[in-house]
Image 1 (cartoon, rainbow, N blue to C red):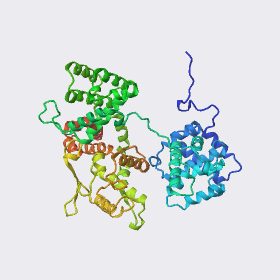
Image 2: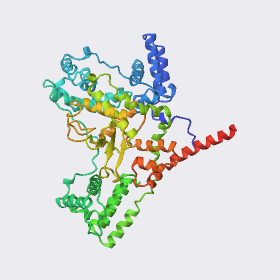
Image 3: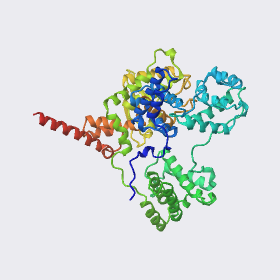
Image 4: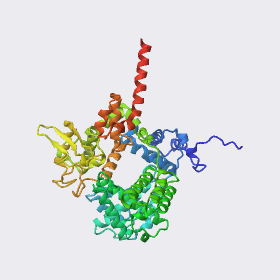
Length: 565
């Protein structure tokens, strides 16, 4: 057997001969053209980057493609650094790589631009849209440096820009810079009449899996619509119909999953014209083929989504299509094979995300964040960005005290859900019809959160919405509430930037249970009421593991007491 020598798998594919940070530090220290201060800053930047990666300089290759994805994941807040300090650190590190001719120097002085580009860049600098300067700067300087005339810019130049960024950017996402440059260029085309009129093409990221409903025959569309109506308003005299109606959001989920299943059949050879109704999907031969295709796309692994689709088809066959006993038996045999074991406790992913919140300092920073985001010196100093910060600060503050689902949070109507009693008290209230499990919930908001909300509502118009918007988190055009997905992404992004933790909006519910049970072992009924679960068994199934941590800590205290006696 050949013995493989010791090596670091993390750098196994780095090109042989690539210098390491330790080599760059030595080269910078020996460069006579650098001042003592500049040498010190460059070496400090390299060492700080190494510390952020939790590696020594002699194990970090000075390879851009190796560095970029790793540094992109670094959250300065988790290292106790301000964003500006981290930006300075990786800027100094990059300067050291420039000094060693590993990456190219950046030319970003106005005088570096050609006269044609200078005239256009003056428009950007004088614009009331600061985002254009930030997003277009590198692209414009790249085009000027390579003598590309403004009226000649095309998609090929944008692709060349992406390739250049991939070879020279050590931290930020090259794809992000590329896409931002394209969208900002197109925005400038529409904003400035003198800007070159050639629009650039933004590549589509998503791989389309599902067809749209109009790709299928009209009879299939009508059958799917009728099925949705039956789910929302089941016939009380039909013994095979559902005994209770489904929420519109659940019906929409059923609808999307059925379209997705039908799309799998189409993508693998079934003509859309053959899928004339829902009965086609639950024919055992078609159902099995669809299941096998979905298993193939998931690496022969049964997923929760596949299990969910199998359940939808089973109910569809029994209650709506009403297939023969023979076909129902065959379909049941198939769906039984796609059942996953019941989830016991929380997923390991969520447990990993909760661990940093057991650190007292991190938890305190999280709970101090809304005050930080909502602090404004004077109302006159409100800018759009400060108002956006306030909006997310309020969302996080509500989640801290009222661990509701993101769908309920995003849909808060200040006239309906915020109930004011007239004595300064305000309650956040959701009727049963507005909650996922049909059970109404209500929380009293603390006075400082009420103050945040009132101050924000008084100052947010017209920067964020119209003056009479009913929604606490509105769409910018005032047409309705912000989508749960959009609000959730903003919350997650803010928490990563400010605290350095990977936490989504739903994790506030898990955190609430963790904090409550940690201080009140066994108090599952109160936890159930706090989270609005339908049954205490659901709370026990999810959070019983928290008791193990509490029990081990309390037992350690018992042993310490015995030893002390």
